[in-house]
Image (tube, rainbow, N blue to C red; front, side):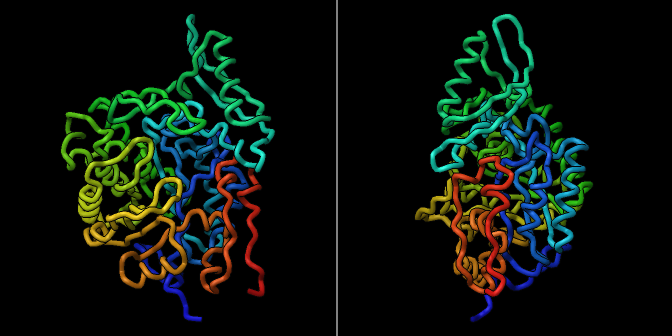
Length: 425
């Protein structure tokens, strides 16, 4: 059996990697109250190999940035930093290299969010759990903050109906989580009920003079990540988050220096890159981009030009890497034929190039062999196969993943209970 190129060593910035199989930043929604617990440490530790590279799930830079997504992690408080330190230590104890992906939700700030996503855990769609979230409840008389406790023992649609009816009975409407209005380059709202189980509040267009404060949130989050022990950070600029909204012309309708031309639309992303690289070092800084991806009604009329421009502009910073999502895949993992490729971006970027997008072992080998990428990130199959690099090494069968458990919020089922390969294999 010939050795797969995915298992060959690679030097990425200051990090010597033993193989090229990367844990992609996969949302798991198990970080209760936005603070990582011990099961999070176990999850990442399980997926760590000596010299392996892991990227954390999307971690919010601020309270507003978490966007109302229940049980998404944050890194804006000292408590969160201390909690992440335990997770990072677990990865480092096994010899892994660990970057923290940082983000701001932007207008995808989610009123109901993943509060109810866990109801898709079981085959029957039924599960009993208790969740809590702080919301702003707005009545005709006054605005107050409440802690809403919902005991769930029915399907998502029923709970949404009950929640809405409860508020109507109180003469209230459900405002933004934490009382924060979503921010965006635009004031254009997302389509109501764009995705099942989610509702969105209209965003507020950021004033030009406010944008440096957003950059500062990212800088501080990067500093916090290094304080927590992370080896670096990955800036999330994908899937309709705040940076992605600025990059893409279907959303960005600004007329100031952050809108209009391609160069202007990329300005915020590059300011954030520069601030973080200056704070923690360019070799501790990576970025993830998805110029071809449509999510949260965020797309671009010329995605290839956007990707190439960003790849060229990023090259001057000598970053740890650029991480691009393949144009062939959508946000739900469906692969389709497309005339586009990441080839022009690979050519334009001078540095480590990571690709992600439904790769098999054989496809990952191929892109390494033909020079189309240096590293390959795996998401869904790394979720269900915590020992994925070892399985690739011996070409062992893979555990199938169960999408119903991806965001179930259960600290064990679909999270840390995936079986490892038999020792004799």
